[in-house]
Length: 111
Length: 111
Image (cartoon, rainbow over all chains, first blue to last red; front, side, top):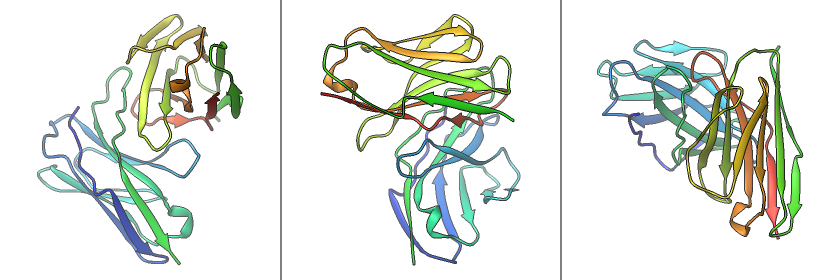
């Protein structure tokens, strides 16, 4: 699976949009981009995923660049409950996908 | 709806004692099952995964073993715990893609 690079930490003001970047310059054509988050002392939670097109759901939006070498997770109106470690993962979808979690980005939402 | 149960939530065990952590999934058939560990201040490490009854793949050599006696039951075991086995143990399941659902975890402290 392709590796990803994320900033170790970010801050965002409550009510603002939080934009979390991820670089995956070695992504292959059939690899997907997945985002998870882990709130302190809980298991990771799936947020969103995509292949080429931008995606949106009730939690977030995912913007993938045209060359697919980077992506941005957008939390449109961050709340204090969005404080967590956010993981960007690139993976194939076949059989048992063994998700490899890196260090992620520790996002702190400030009041 | 699908749910995942993991117990116990916390466990304190002496060095050299055995371990058995259980994970069960409801509401789905033939899931892929996973055991992850997160040591204090560290990232998530995949320990075992299973694509079916009796089929276990180990990702890292260690003091632990896993078994899948039933389709929706995944057990993590050790015959003799080490101090280094302390950590946050998470069970997860997936079906057709990389959308994992994680349990609430077991925090194990070996003393």
